[in-house]
Amino acid sequence: MDYLEVSIALTPRNPWTEILTAELADNGFESFVETEEGILAYAQVELVDVNSPLKNTFLEENQTDVSVVIETKIIPQQNWNAVWESDFQPVEVEDYLTIVAPFHDRTKAKGMIIEILPKMSFGTGHHQTTWMMSKALFELEQIPAEVLDMGTGTGVLAFVAERLGAKHVVAVDIEDWSVENTLENGERNNCKSIEAICGDVDVLNGRTFGLILANINKNVLKAHMSSYAEMLEQNGTLLLSGFFDSDVEELVTFAEQFGLMKRRVLNKDNWAAIELKKL
Image (cartoon, rainbow, N blue to C red; front, top):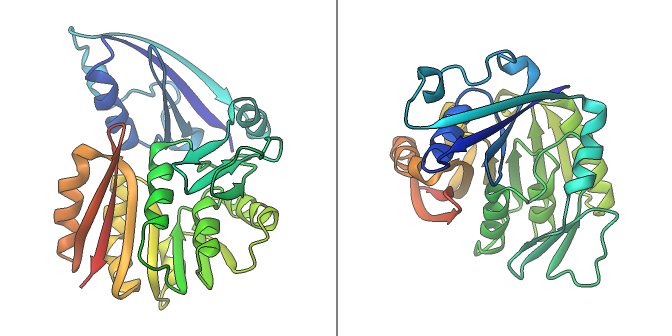
């Protein structure tokens, strides 16, 4: 699957970078990289308007208090792995975890080591949301036997969960190449308890979990919330990320109607993660 890369230079950068990223996340873009000039935004070509990628954002309204320069290009699926290899540096999650690629030197790695070859999948730990979800996993009092990782991407959170004690981890993604990548990366990490499934939340009817991980985006999280609550065991934990800290109050309030209560919030560079408990 091809991806659209949109390079957006904003003057001034603040607060427009954060505002635009939030709007693009609601319009099909799934990954963002901050640059000195603004942001790089990535989306599957079939999910966005390639000719008008900033449609339905404040920039479409010709704001006079910000100038913008936009460049777009298509990244073919077969080239995505080369893009990642050129940029992929080891990721350290405090002293808990180091995420490396096969070509990295591990001699200075701290804590648990997870090896990832991302290919077309997102979730290497570089993004603030994956970093926070990884940290939150290490700081849970206990990892339940049954864990669900929704939107697994590269599988990194599933691997961390297994290595921390989960007996069975179901890793779900809507993209078949992410499922394939998860299985390949699972072999790299000698993980034996990962069940990778291609599909959405409806493929899990009737299954229950003590811990659910969902690092997606706000709109998908809200659409799935009732399903998460139904699948989560009593006193189970739901870890959410993929949204900005400005979205926390909205998501916490929304989750409460399903008996999911906030335990704590993590923040990193304007992004957030929420730990919820089913009461």
